[in-house]
Length: 438
Image 1 (tube, rainbow, N blue to C red):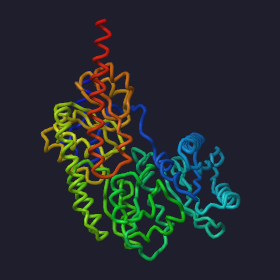
Image 2: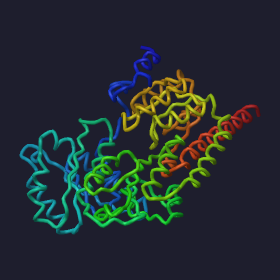
Image 3: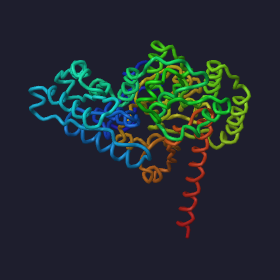
Image 4: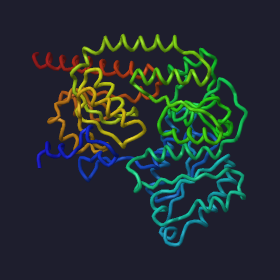
């Protein structure tokens, strides 16, 4: 079967209505997606006072522990708070409840954590081990608050549910508090340097204080008092469920303020934040939006007509693609993990530009590489072998750093990154031609 026929197996944006419509390029995937356990590792490792006990196979426990150690060594102020319970064959056959009970009580005695998060993996869910019942039995015997997150991969396609569940379970640590005016929580932000974001700079000018950034700058003590905030600002869709439950239980309102590129959505988000906090942000919004519109005029000529493939970044796949298509770029293929909140609207925005690109699931890079020559790409957005792309005349743009930002600075930095990558690529190619001529 030709590569073009393999491409035709995929559906286009106009044919996507459910997550099942997002097809894989092949049944065998390489490298494949992360599992929900990785989502827990990404999230729970930030929370001070929390210990995490991963109960699973040798592979699962080693993988998580190795990741936790590496990240603690690379990020200042972060500690390795993951512990492992590696199952034996006997544990699988005859139950591990007794041993897990002993492990929890030993962790409580030795480390005196404020909370212990028990994490079940695929094998425990297959055999039906009931750690929720164990928590009910043991809770009164330990001083730590016991929590549970399940991370079975056979019920989902990626690591996102692990992030969502890790954040949602933190509701159990929260307590009713008197409201503190002009105080906010940022929910879903997993990056350092949040104080340098455009959003925080704007809020500081109005004397708005940040109580907690979950998970990036959080602790058990901060989680207990999180309902004191006057507003939750949701900066990542993975924390939407937590925000909704905090509103139901503690009456804390929230505004969904993603890492958007669409200027109207950013403007609307600022206005909603201002309204909820009793502030007028109109002047700041007008000035910041004006800067982005001016930049669009500057970069649009360079970007117009460029054909791109969206591979994988921390930004919203369809929202980003719609923004770039509106600038005059041409989306050829979009890789996505799933359909998430508001994706239906983003799909419509792509179609409104006159483009109808292919859509595939992420993490199938081996087969995707065989399609580059057929797609006539100018730009590849995401991680790949840069030398391979350069050989094929494709510009690579990695946007990981942009994910740390919030507000109008997001579209501004994306446009700058694209323009800079194109300029550098042209310079290198020109240098190669000059060397060949010599």
